[in-house]
Length: 105
Ligand code: SF4
Image (tube, rainbow, N blue to C red):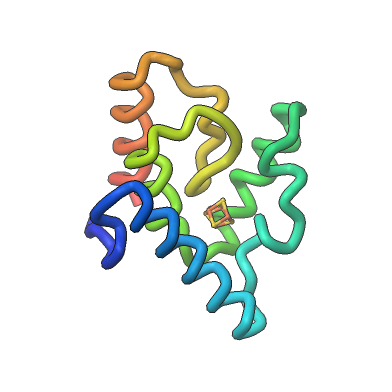
């Protein structure tokens, strides 16, 4: 797993993610969460699971997104192909699970 440029801080990572998502959208290949954001933040875990699958199959920002979630300690919604909402609420356990998920790519 490599650290993408711009992901050196929480705000830098979030800005970099947004910038790259906008660039992909401008090039006609928007990340699925920009096309239809609702399932990524849905209260329905099945919808979030489908959104996470869409990340894995159709998003070029998977690693950056997952790293951004790690660094910014996200607790809710779908990031980097992971439904973070379902992960342990203990921060260190959540970080370990997400890091392992990203490392297996
Ligand atoms: S990995 Fe998923 S949540 Fe992250 S930018 Fe891509 S589509 Fe959006």
